[in-house]
Image (tube, rainbow, N blue to C red; front, side, top):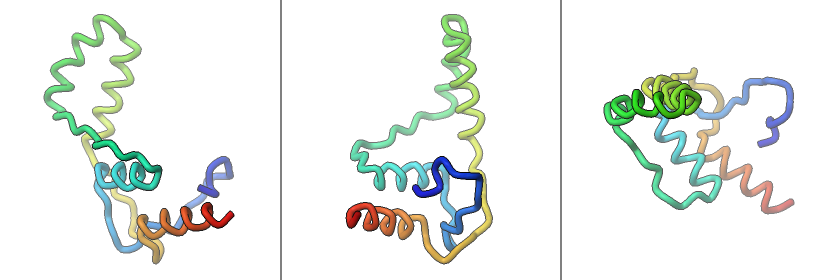
Length: 99
């Protein structure tokens, strides 16, 4: 959290673990206190609906098509740091609770 608004930098977290995009969303949701289930919609269903969306809202279509394209592949970052993402969130939470 301390990195938000600062100059771009590499934050050595993640440890020896590689996370899928869904795992990252679940970890962030948990750390943020989001209790609802994260919906998983099949790409085929979204791609079938996109042409209809484009007819009514090209702007929404562009955003949804981009989100689908980006979400199809997991971006694998190098394993960096000693802390797992879970440990990083826990330490950040504890530091915020104490402050």
